[in-house]
Length: 432
Figure 1 (tube, rainbow, N blue to C red):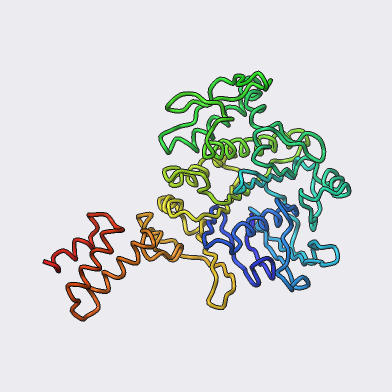
Figure 2 (cartoon, one colour):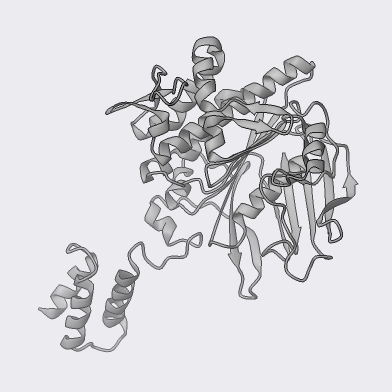
């Protein structure tokens, strides 16, 4: 598992270092500070491959950019790596290693745009070298040959459309996609389909609208494929017409099952042991999801991964979120010995910093909104917050406010809050 990351002069981060816990690491913080970049670097640290564009140095620091990370094995052995940015080749070079080489986990990265990145050393055709620095958007023929030679189809980056329609890799057909695999699994690979059905149920049953597979069938004379359908409380629909939220859940379920089952099959074919670890990276957990889904998705994901990979394989999750409901959903299961909450923030010195925050059970999503994690003064509109502050000042300033001032505060407040707001109730007796 990934134990620590240190980032010097990369993107908005000039000096950031933090440890990671073995099970759940949830990152929150303001926009533009580098949460997605942290997930990209975590993917690269474990694989040597970039899920999107290669990370670049902070402006003016091309010779001083450095990444350092530590990987901790299940038998308490650790290994450290340091890479520096080489401005001549415009890429990263491994410059220091410590400890034995660790087997790589299966890595699944759910990106915010609906795409996914997957790395599986077993499908790459054996151990790949440390210090590789490749990314899928490099379409030079030399880069394509290098990826195909070193990784086979062990390194796959899917767009949102390719998750459903399939992916052509550098070394042939990398994945059939959800539409084709669904039908194949339903009629020919019962074990995989049972895993898909179970994962979908786990990810969706908490909202009271469990996604249930229905019979695949054609939807158009212009499409020869039999498209999967799903059963919902109001009826059955083809997955091609599913909402953005449904497609996100369908993609999560499919990519989890596909990545793990392909890994198991590759290990059988190559007579190699299965990995004992899975790294799941999840950007913008709440993206497209209704609040009722936001408050169950991470616990459901933990349960789904555990059921899929079994007790011998340990999942590590690194997730980024802006949702107070996501944080509130973790209160019943958060374990300080293996989970942590990380806040990425801009300090008074205008430096990006990442710090571990004590996980305090707030009990309510609106309390999370007003915590240090989000920093809102009130769980209201900006106008209501200002009116509430003005009314509070009138009642607690020490000086006796005039009736005109109180009436003005009441008028402003009544325009932006509920008729049953407690502050309105406090102002009424003062006016009477």
